[in-house]
Amino acid sequence: MSIFKKLWNGEICIAENCVPQTEEYHYAAHSLSQASESLEADMTEKQKQSYEAYQNARADYEILLQINVYRQGVKLGYELAQELSKED
Image 1 (spheres, rainbow, N blue to C red):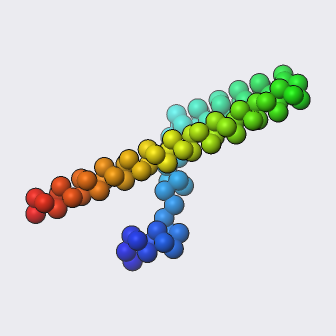
Image 2: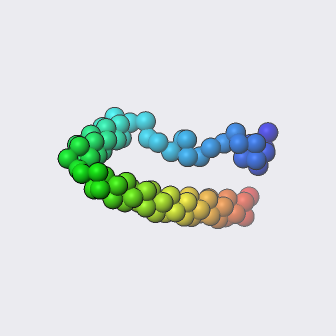
């Protein structure tokens, strides 16, 4: 099946394959989770609401950044493919 059909049919989900499966990543994710839980445990309800709003805004920002990085990677891959095809 072509790559286009796989993309169209939802058989390829790049985001699912981007999480590193390393001890270093899992340790960092666990440390982040523990730090967040510890921080929230010491907050008032109003502080928790502000922190949640911050986390949501940060997530939106990160998604936009990641989409652009992905776009640039695809563009670079396309340019590499074009250059390689010229050499044949």
